[in-house]
Length: 344
Image (cartoon, rainbow, N blue to C red; front, side, top):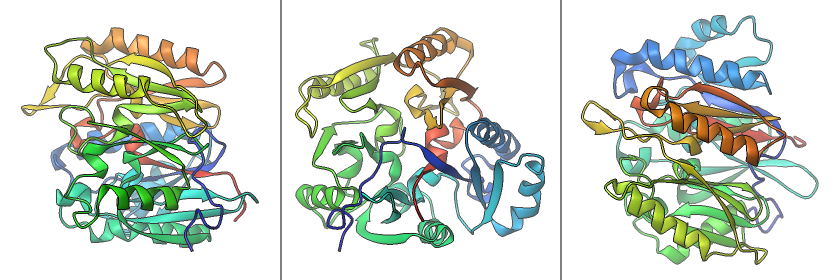
């Protein structure tokens, strides 16, 4: 039986967490292995920031266990879990945790193929989610679908945000129709309504993950990163997604309140556009971990903090250096996977 048939559902990300899981970078698999020290320093900053709010479990390759454990030896909120992995984006290859009406935990093990076969090998990454679920000791649902956690966002009340660019990409599930993909997603995270945005941000090598462009702030309320420069490719992308959201209703029949966040200024690295996004923030218990970008982005950094502070007045906004790991293709949300508070 699937999760929907057993009344398991994917909670909203802002629901109380038991802990956060995050994977430690692997130098050999990095796009820029020479940046390893900078990237691991960025990860250490993110882990430390999250640990101010909730426990953090760092998934590390066994060869790195001693070194990484020593880094956080004085932090009682951080522990390490040795699991072999190829890459460090746990949002995408980790499990999606679920809860049922008795507050019992379970998890979905999605298929993973490194964002449509972009980085090889990925066999170790595809095996990470079952090992985490076994470690936690919860029921595992194996989904017959290649999908990454960064491509979906739930309101916890039956509505999901995603993009056609990613979920319908033929490099994930070429044998499945749109209707079949939608049916599998609805069955395994237990939602009634999927709001399909069209494309994600320009330059996003994940093929348009939704966690860079839009997320729920609450049921019936969506935050959208927007571009106001018609000369920027993101202008057309974000305006189109804005129109889709303005015309959408959620599973409860509500029209959506839309909160706009201005995108950071255009920035390149090694001739490629960086996918800078404030929407790649992460909910922690009582807070938000927000990547900021500095330099030419100081004004939009400040505005993003103001928007999120107004949207979440009861949460502390904890900023981290968003430039530390972005050259590897992702940011704070991409590194994390929340485990909701529930019964094991």
